[in-house]
Length: 75
Length: 152
Image (cartoon, rainbow over all chains, first blue to last red):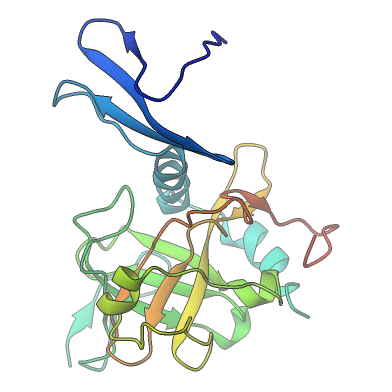
């Protein structure tokens, strides 16, 4: 992983047309501004993780394997 | 009574008004708004969320409290507005809302529950959201296994 130290107001560029600027930084939190071409999706990683988990949940699930595990929950 | 084709059950009739609506869809399924909650006494505590728009789409969910009895909601004011809830306090699970974790079956055959983004259904207006928490308290792929203690 490439590691770069930046201060608020400074930016990095990725490829042709993507720019990530540090807008604010405070204890434990950083505010980023991202400029990217419209066709490049930009989202929090948790959003992508949840989309992938939902897609996986939407596939055919072998109920005979899953239900016994779930029935044990909370019992 | 309207009829619905389902993924895991036969086609069935349902009471008008028992549908739930995700006005913004779910992450990855933004165009799917209408679902029918289906439970099966033989499969408690599982609740199936069957799409009314796509018969082949059905999410398997379990109440978050069955996975973690101490689970705390962290809805934003915007989410609470969409659910017609009092925005001055977090809703009470079971009283104001149902709170369900979507379950997936991973490639390594370990079922996982998404506690980072639970489905929250308003008991007041039948609307639902799947908001993604802004903290790092709960995981997106919480493993559910036979050996797992309920609230690790």
